[in-house]
Length: 59
Image 1 (cartoon, rainbow, N blue to C red):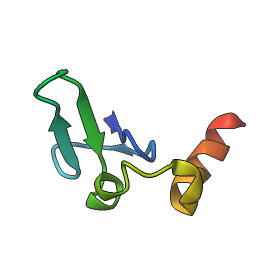
Image 2: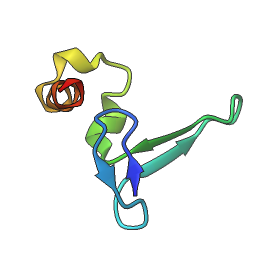
Image 3: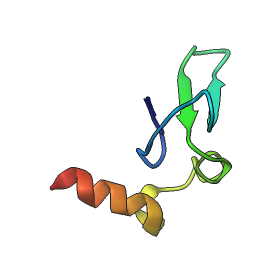
Image 4: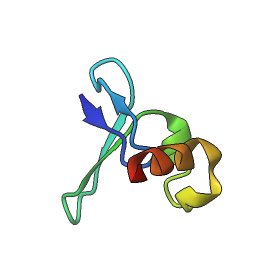
């Protein structure tokens, strides 16, 4: 299981998600959906579905 870089959801990359590798730095980013990939440049605090993960993580 891999954790989404944006929202933090655990997912199986064999069946779902997108894996993007940066050719310059070599950083690998895992996204559970195209929704997370498209919103990756935005702040998580403005997205209700991503902030739910952050609140859960703080508890």
